[in-house]
Amino acid sequence: MDRTSDEALLQRLADGDVDALGEVYDRYAPIVNGLALRILRDTGDAEDVVQDVFVQVWRESARYDRGRGSPQSWICMMARSRALDRLRRRRARHEEAGGEDAPEPAASPTSEPVLAGTMEKALGTLPAEQRQPLELAYFEGLTQVEIAARLREPLGTIKTRMRSALMRLREFLARS
Image 1 (cartoon, rainbow, N blue to C red):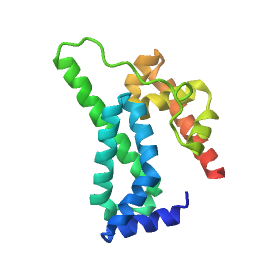
Image 2: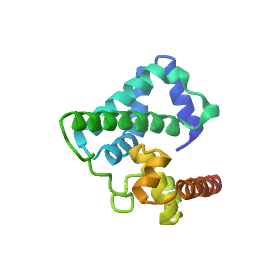
Image 3: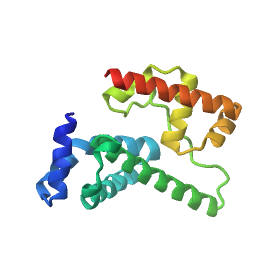
């Protein structure tokens, strides 16, 4: 997608153009839904996140800062944050209800591809030992300490793998 036209679309939205919201929704709802579904693994919760994200886009379109990333990354970060918040609330309710185990972790993108084109290709270039910690951090909201415990790896190893993975992703995306 053309970043310039996406930025112009957000500017129209910030100026109060209601039609622009429909265009933003049509353009990004599949990505937002896929990301939310990937994190939450529940269709109803994912649909709620999609609705919440586009209400937030409507309200905060004037706050979009092109210097901090593309419109797609801005919207995806909203979706990720909303989905992780919902996942954390679900886990807290589960624990309050006396559940002993957290919900099952989400499947890896290799078995359930929902990431859009370029990012999916970029992640596919990473070796599994670098990709897995990124997936746990991004899709499940785990900290590096939690990732190290889950993978039974030293914290320093996890930090190094994640840093290396991010550098490789940056290089790949810069070439794309």
